[in-house]
Amino acid sequence: MSDIFFITGTDTDVGKTVAASWLAFMVSKERTTALVKPMQTGSVSPELNGDEAFYKNFLPEDVTIATFSTYPEPLAPSIAARRSEAIIDFDQIVKKSLSVSVDHDISFFEGAGGLLVPITDSKNMADYAQRIDAQIILVARPDLGTLNHILLTIEAIEQRKLDLALLVISGFPDQAEVVHWENIQFLSKYFSELPILVLSKVDLNEPHAIQNMNAYFCNVLPKFLKDVPISHFLIPENL
Ligand SMILES: Nc1ncnc2c1ncn2[C@@H]1O[C@H](COP(=O)(O)OP(=O)(O)OP(=O)(O)O)[C@@H](O)[C@H]1O
Ligand SMILES: [Mg+2]
Image (cartoon, rainbow, N blue to C red):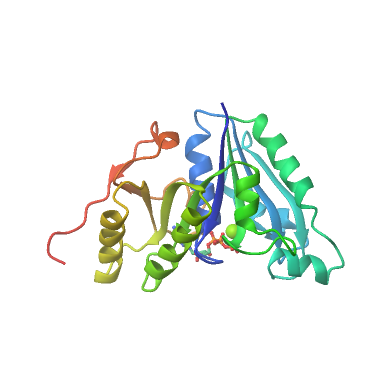
């Protein structure tokens, strides 16, 4: 049985690529793994300067890495495509995604921006996740403002009856302040059944940044991470 995950974020630039790379690296030790960017924008050569380049920089060669379509301007896919006189073939992207997933134990598909970003005039990222029957991984920042973005996105996920498998908070600082601790404390209580993964802030220019990232979980671990050694996130008592 192959697992399919759609990695979305509360916004663009929140750490989807960082989290996707960490997850793919960890699970690829035991399972055949694919990591795909179905729609890349803001790049003409994704293998050089897109998310694919980041994946390739950190992941072993046995992880299948691909970008399905790419558009030069850093805009939402439907807009970037229109402006380069192209049309995104939603059904074709769904078909390609499913064909990757049948060849791997576990496949991660990284969206562009957040959950409701348009892919065509009538389809968005949530529609794509639904069509490929993916479980959702939601990535968010640890800072002030993140709670509102997380709550809004989870409301939209639930409204669409999508299956939220994991919330990832990426970039938790070494010198965490009250806001960072309190945000995690709030989330772990508010979503007490939800697996939450916290990834530490690292210097992404270091050669093994992804491999050396510290990871902690709150509540429970999702099934697909059960073989990965991750410690429980500990919140100081007197904040
Ligand atoms: N764990 C982390 N350690 C260090 N920096 C991080 C971490 N997580 C996120 N960041 C910061 O966030 C930035 C954006 O991360 P990333 O490229 O993963 O975002 P994204 O959500 O994939 O963006 P896009 O929507 O463009 O695909 C990084 O360049 C880095 O500055
Ligand atoms: Mg990205």
